[in-house]
Length: 209
Image (cartoon, rainbow, N blue to C red):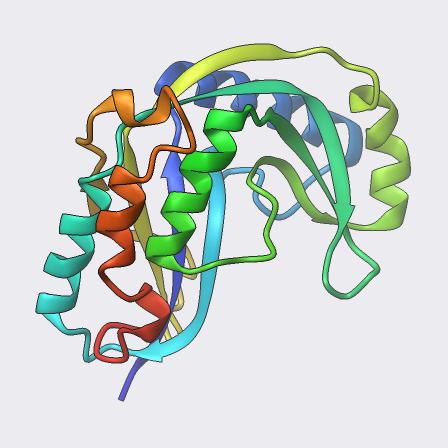
């Protein structure tokens, strides 16, 4: 049986992707080739380890119903930051998101659906670069200002086949956010939270993941 890796992301609008792509090209001129330099920009939410491909279609129908309860969300890029990769050697530079109370509440509702993650929501600029590359590149971003707002209106699941020689993640499923934006005007509102709470997290949907 073939296996796949699944990546849960929030796609960003084309005009923001163009801005990030320019930054990626700038980074390439400074440090040369690096992982992710050709990847389309997105907000990373969650990654699931390899799973068999016998995915239950009913599970996706269930997921679609839950995600449709969420309204589109407005995010804002506010400068840049960095973190160490899991191996504590490579580093990643990313566009930092300014998380308002509404953003944090929206993300909490989202994670109640797709499962929690230790991943900081971010937009990658240069992923898994070496310490030498980081020392060259970080001064270009450390104090750089970038402020841009954009709307996120869907969640995308990307899939990597373990035996796929291409190794590029491909779009597997997309789910639109069609909920009422008024549920976020007071982020202690329990109405949508109660609807989501009535279903288990995707982590508990064994037939799906």
